[in-house]
Length: 85
Image (cartoon, rainbow, N blue to C red; front, side, top):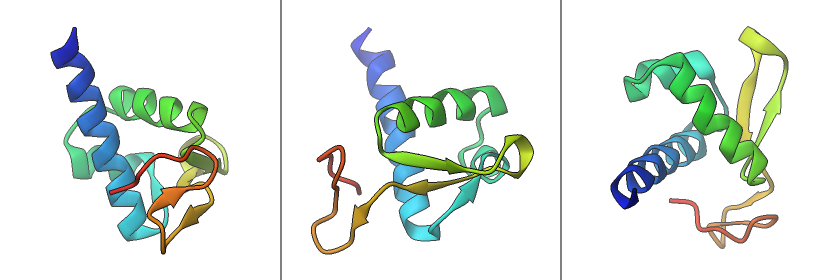
């Protein structure tokens, strides 16, 4: 179970890192960058939104995802107090 958990965290960290660099991304872009299925991207994005790390703007295919209240100087997300790479 730990190995699967680590794989999920690695993917989520990659998503957060990529969004930090780009500012905002679509699910389709994440599919292409990460090389995983749309369903897998949606699962990870849903979890990150639930954890308060990302916000979703728009609906369905036109949706984009952004970091929530990211503070550049501290590297922390204010709402979640988690470090963002």
